[in-house]
Image: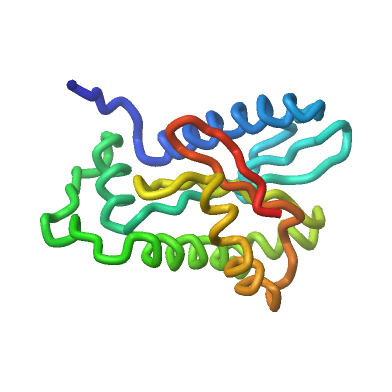
Length: 178
């Protein structure tokens, strides 16, 4: 299979976020809720209304490893040289623990990020959507297995997010953490 590289890294990021937002709109529609995207100021990734009530969304991804993240994103963009995962980095000894640590780190970064703090002060609590990129578990499984660990990790942080959802990047199936 030949993949054409047509987009710069920033354009891929925008296309990815747009696809996630559309999928989240469809998901909320199944809950009899309507989402309208008002703006994409960066940050946050979107200002929205849910049934007329304004809020905001931030989107991030949790990859099994940094090397995998770099390989996937560099392969798909025209302005980056592809950096494949080395053979040494393909070996995973404790995949569940490795991904648990990554998931916690990615979420804590969003709770601690200064620019997200400014968004929180302006708009109040938002919604965090976390893409799950690991072959070892799904968003639904991670909501069950990681819920208490993540709630414990963020309990002392400023509560910037009213809801956190995990989603599978391959099919955009959403599962609510809280």
